[in-house]
Structures are given as structure tokens and as C-alpha cells.
Length: 397
Ligand SMILES: *Cc1c(COP(=O)(O)O)cnc(C)c1O
Figure (cartoon, helix red, strand yellow):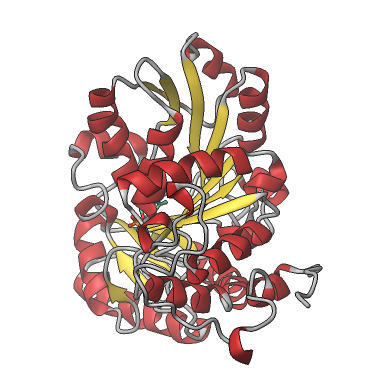
């Protein structure tokens, strides 16, 4: 008899939701179904044929149920990358002649897709300031079909007026879409707040171990089903082995993210008090412009922060060379702390003037907090500041 799922807390859901019931030959973890196709059993339509590209192996189905359960949504879908989730969603919901409103500060890949690729499909866009709902109406057109935002912006961790996004979408009959990668399902569950679709780069926190690339679409069943059909055709499917790893990663999502929330807040507070630091961007700090909004919306402030050193670019470069625990690498959300300078990585495509305008200075450092001991990270930062103090004349506490 399959057991009925009735898990109250997300810490339990990450472990048990969506798992095969009864267990497959008693297997406690879902076995990897490394089979491209499955024996026919009277499938009615093309999309029901059991085949990896059609996103319906047992490994896919477990993830679909688990992810839907985590965010209290009707349905979910995994994809071959975060970008596959984003592009397939936009290409499934928008068609020639349509218009979409997008937040003005977007993940680099999404920004490029919207500004450089959507036009080729006859789809137009306008940028909106997510902090200024009164300005959105002016950008609205008769052919506007969707509004697209991110839970927190990269790398300044700004939090838009997400409640207003949901209301605006409802009153104008738009599909509301949010990239929830940075907050994760632990800190924010967009479908519960009224968003139609929540997208993730599962490469980051959901998997959490920096060893696969994957994506997810979570939300309204009718939309997820439409996106699945488009995914079946475009082919951005997740391999069963990667599905297995993602399922394994999600089981520890709650303990990882709860810890990362705590650790990031301590590190942000440490940095904010440090004399060598000009500015810290973290929604958990009272000095953050949208701190109250973040507190109202989120259960935790997340594991991402950025900061600016006195001494600009030179200081940032030296600091990055001096730290010994964080790895200098792009991406985020894994168990290892990662450190980068957005001006030379994620935002290097922009002109220095454009970067300056949105607050991404050459000395800005982005930090993805891992699961190491917080005290070890702080001690490591401290010795890096000392090295800096000896080489560059900045005030060090
Ligand atoms: C990394 C990232 C993506 C893209 O995900 P991939 O898995 O690299 O394709 C999209 N949105 C955000 C916010 C990201 O951080």
C-alpha cells in the first residue's frame, strides 16, 4: 500500500516527499534507472512514452513530486540546467508578438537571453525596477503576457517588491515568474505567495555539492505541463544519474541552508563592524535597504553576501589571494565557500560605467557561504585583512 504523504515541516519533506512508495525492492535510496527507454506498456501519446528525454523516468518523477511538495505547488519539472528551466519556460509561455516585463538586474545568462535571443522569436521586453511598482503600469502593453523577477539580485542582494509583483500579475492577467535560486525553497516558497512559477538553478543550493548542472520549474500544473511539452521537444532533459545526485543533495537542503543562513548573518555582521570594509550587502543586516521587506517575506536571509573593501580593486585582489579556505571560483550554493569579484566574472561583459551605475564596483567581493565552521572563515578573513593592512594602507580593526 502506498503511504499517504502528510509531512508538516520542510525538514521532513526534503527527505521523504516524493519517494517511491512502496520502496523499490525495499531500496532506501531511489535506484538510478540508467535506461534510455522502457518497455512499452500501452502508452497513449508521444509524451507518455517512457524515455529519458521525455522527462518521465522514475528518477525524474521522484524529483517532480519532491520539488512540488517543498514549495507547496501543484507540479514541478527538472531540467538539464538552470538556463534550460528559464529559456524553456519563456519559450513555452511566450510566442511571436508577445511582450514580457523583466527585472532590470537579472542573472547574466537570463539577461543575455532576454536582450539578445528573444527578439529572434518575435518577443519583446521592457525592464522594470522591482522596487518601484508604481512605474510598472507605464511599461505595460496590450500584448504583455508575463512578469519575470528574481528573489534576490546578484551580487547586491536587493529584494524587490515581490508581493506587488503577484498583485500586479493578477490584476493584469500576466503569468508571474520568479527565479528563486538564491533564496531556495527553505527561505522562500513563491507558489505559496501566489507566484505562478518558481524557477531554480538546481546547480546551486538544491543540489548543493558543486557536482552537477540542473534546473527546476515549480508551480501551476497547467503551466508546468505546457513547459514539459516544450522541454520534451527542445531536449534540455536531466540525465537519470544527475537526477539521483540532485535527489540526494535535496535531502540535506534544509540543514545546509539553515546553517548557511546563520553563518552568513554572523559573517555579514563581522564584516560590517570591520574598519577595512566600506559596505556589506546582506538582507539580514538592518542597514540593508530592504531589510524589513526581507524579514517579512523570508524565513532566512540566505547564504550569499557581497562587500566592498577600502582600497578598491587592489585590496580586493589581495584579499582574494590571501584567503585560504574559500575557493576563488564562480557559481554558488555549494558546501564549499566560494569567493569572486563580479566585475571580473559575472558582470565583466558590462562597461565599467554601467557597472558603477548599478553599484558593482571593481573592489566588490561576492561571497557564497559554505558549510565550514563560521569561526574558521572569520579567522581566515582576519588573517587576510592583516596581510592587506601590511601591504595596502587601509585601516584595520
Ligand atoms: C546559476 C544561475 C542560473 C543559471 O543556472 P545554470 O544551472 O548555470 O544553467 C540562473 N539564475 C541564477 C540566479 C543563477 O544563480
